[in-house]
Amino acid sequence: MEKKANKCESSYIEYCYLSRKLTYLVSLQAGHAGRLFKIHRKLLGLKCEPVIAALDGSFDEGRQGIYRFDETTEGTVTRFIEWAYRGDYPTVIREIEPVQKSLPHGIEANVEGKPIIAPPAADFTSENHPLLVHIRLYIFSGTYLISELQHLAFEKVTACFMDLEKPNSLDTQLAVIDAVRLSFLRLHEHDALLNWLSQYSAYCIDKLRLQSSFHDLLSDFPILSSRMMLSLNPASSPPWKITQPKYPFTHYSPNRSAEIKYDY
Image (tube, rainbow, N blue to C red; front, side, top):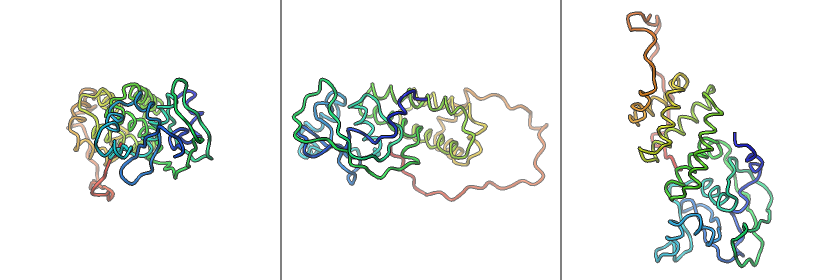
């Protein structure tokens, strides 16, 4: 699915949690309570102009040397830093021992100490699910105008769906539904990925319709229903040829949280 990229999935983000002894660094943070992740200012300027512009300004970011992503997960931030240094990012984040790494060729810095990695607690469910990981990076890179990363994330997430084919298990059905919901919640309605996901949802309608959360998704985002209609086929039989069930059951829906926040 991702060729040889899996080789790096066993290691944690190798450049993201750098030692405070390094100079010419700025900090990135997910929310206001997350850990600070260091990245070289010069490299950040090459990869993400909107963020470095904020850090160079006279507002809080510039004075503190910290840029906070209010609606971004920590995993997305660390994968962005990994990509900035290596040109790729791992799907799965795992804990490893501290490892020394250097800057890529062409990036100069005055290094007084050795960069290290502080192993965090990793979430091996939603935080590391391939569909959600790549879609979060796609949303993030679109928000911060990182076209190269967005293209990479698009290639990765569509490859995941192609490899999945149809979601046959409960877990994969729920993951697909969450991925589609996150996309329609965060992306612009004309984004190319939304058309792609609409076509995929129509292709998997026989699997996704088994879950009440998919019906909720269609209700919350009518535009998805409209786009799926372009790909759906006519019913196999007219209503007068359909035998109604002898023992109809009322619709059952498990209890769900009244308020669900989808961060990218």
